[in-house]
Length: 95
Image (cartoon, rainbow, N blue to C red; front, side, top):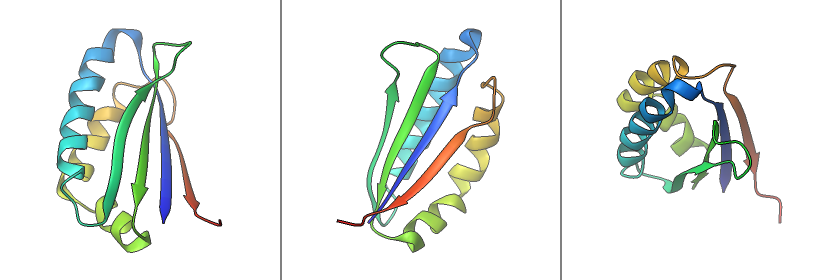
């Protein structure tokens, strides 16, 4: 099992745009083979910080996601809503 966290620092004036784009990404991603969970969370102390927390069956499913049409089209648009680089961490289950 693979877990991914993607942390976004969103421009205050672009939060609505970010959420709309994220919704489209999430709806399409949840239909992908190997996607177990794909959810958007807002930081409880900073309303401009969001994280997508993902769970995948394996690295092959994650790689397919990174190459999917919706991912390659939406991520560049999401990058226009953030104030700094998106922080992505990928984890494999140990126990």
